[in-house]
Amino acid sequence: EKTANPAYYEKEGMTATQAQGLSDVIDYAAQSRKTGLTDEHAEIMRHFVTGINCQPETARDEMMATKKHYGKDEGVVAYHGYQSFAPGEATPEMAHEIGVKLAQRLWGDRYQVIVATHLDKANHLHNHFVLNNVSMVDGRKYYRSNQDYYNMQKESDSLCREYGLSVIENPKPGKAKHYGEWKAEQDGRQTWRGMVKSDVDAAIRGAMTERQFWENLRKLGYEIKQGKDISLRPPGKERFVRLCRNFGDDYTIDGIRRRILAQTRPERRVIPPDPPPKRVHFKGTLHTARRMTGLRALYFYYLYRMGVLPKKREPNPKRVYFLFREDIRFMQNIARETRLLVTHRIDTADQLAAHKDGLAAQFKTLCTNRKRLRHQARNIQDEEKSAAVKSEIAALSMKIGELRREVKLCEDIEMRSEVMRDKIRRAQEDEQKSNVKEMKPHEPLRGRR
Image (tube, rainbow, N blue to C red; front, side, top):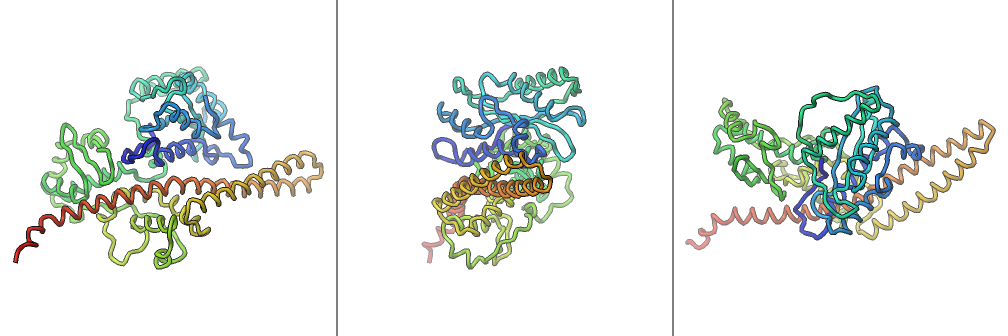
């Protein structure tokens, strides 16, 4: 599974989106809430997160340094693998040991890998692998193929048998999923490819003829290419999506024709409704927001373009640009970042950096105090005093966790703000082109009397 790889940035080197994608997949693999452990037991958690040819705490920076060293920081930035175990068969320690051995056998001599063991709500143990696709040895890129998938499955089965665990005999082949799609499915969110599929379904439901179907897609802003497979490019995206390859036989031209002919009448609504966003509360008004500048203004304008903030006119889903519509699935993250900016009146990159530095200083002080209390607790014999110190340690751990999350928000704002500006610029360029196209048919009338 690949991490997100938007190709519409024209800057040299790794884009903010690619760097954020690498950070996101590592963060997801190593997050403590999936291991079932709290910040207070962070040292235990390290037993369930292992770095091969890199340190878990600095894996992102080490992987990016490797890419930069070999001048290969464009395109796919990492691969995400997954290994699951039957419920109740393995212990977390055993599952992690198997995962580390698997990664060492497959990639350990050439690549940097993070191995993390998760325990989900249903008590299902599974391993995640985050593989830097650029070799630290010679800079050669790793390209996942069906043979690689087969080798991973074969080695995994071999290790499971060594440990007396069950394996799936004669597994059915399947198409590997993009990391973003896999993660969105886990969280019940829709990906941009999912939105393309929804748009195609809506275009079919709103058509009685093939011609109407194509027209419905064009109204939604899609660029269309027809060959053996139908390819669509959503507005603002650089890449085309092949319908049959991604969504199955119902999305071949024959499959689409069959679906259109099977309908008795078209739906009036061609534009699919956006998934209802979760309710988010902000203090203040749009009138106040208009007086904001910098980062706060950027975030409020972006929320407006997403259709989240109220508008005077009735919202029209067609006017919510595709690149903004796809970010509705990140609404909770964007809302948290907006609250931080508004609460601390942060408008510039320097203000954001200063706030993050202040958090880092607090974090360091609290960690020092917690370390001192832990050392003190080991020498206390009185149970009442020991309980009081442990209570202080727990309170400090909670505060440290809050600071860590706020630092992460600052880092996300640094990356997302650049992505937001690029998306806004791209949307405005496309809208200007659309306005020119709409004006052209009327231009000859201007010279008439």
